[in-house]
Length: 347
Image 1: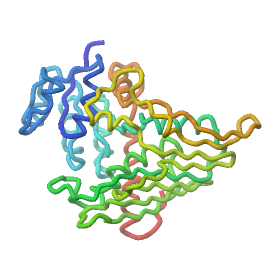
Image 2 (image 1 turned 30 degrees about the vertical axis):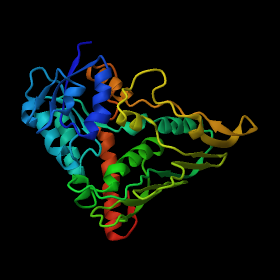
Image 3 (image 1 turned 120 degrees about the vertical axis):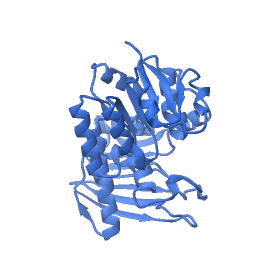
Image 4 (image 1 turned 30 degrees about the horizontal axis):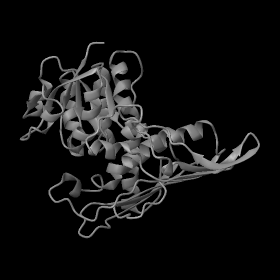
């Protein structure tokens, strides 16, 4: 396979921690350009790549096939549009777009130009998500009746000057962390019947919503998604109850912290979780009661780019098609409507 030449459109946390390390360790890719307006941080990981001072310069680099649009959310539509019109395949950081109309337009343009448009929903490659999916695939809990998923943090400060601290309901926790949770729910359980959303500003002097509580109604199951920036003692991330049993899981996937600490995603132990964080499973298996720890499956964000490389060479499907991300955007915007109108919104 010829190396896929890549341009990264931003080198803040997203580029340095998530996209860059995966592209660095995979032989299928060659990062040939990085868009940094004033800094040269990317030189540490990609010394051979050209540092571009404008996005236009990046997409015009010779031979470049793939553009990673991992810029602030409000720039996703504009930059993806430019990259597609330049004939480039595109990976867009979550959330895909701010509106359904923008998403539909980009999907149609990619189809017209026969280009791959994929959305980086990396939390599908968490060990937690893989474990939950395995539980559901094996029907270890029987028919699900209730599920609650949390994605919490503890951040009392306001990061002045950050685009994440200014804006409307599409800037705060809902479109940030909420886009991960909604994507997971759609993959695991399908589309809900309705949504009721509560958003709030809970940090002192916060200008964006930093708390969310989404209640999703299914035919025979109730599902709650919660996220808060003021949780100092984390509770379980996943609480799942079915007619046969229950599963409780504490602890967030270890990959993000490892990447922040400068590790590269390589080795047999990558993404493995310590036993102390394995979830507790109580159920019935083949007529026998079971109560014990369930080993967390290993996560690996790099698998997204492995699968994408095969997609770009015509050997498999898109790992996260933009059409799936559109469904996430629809639910996020329904949550905004529910919150603003103080009502349950049918989907």
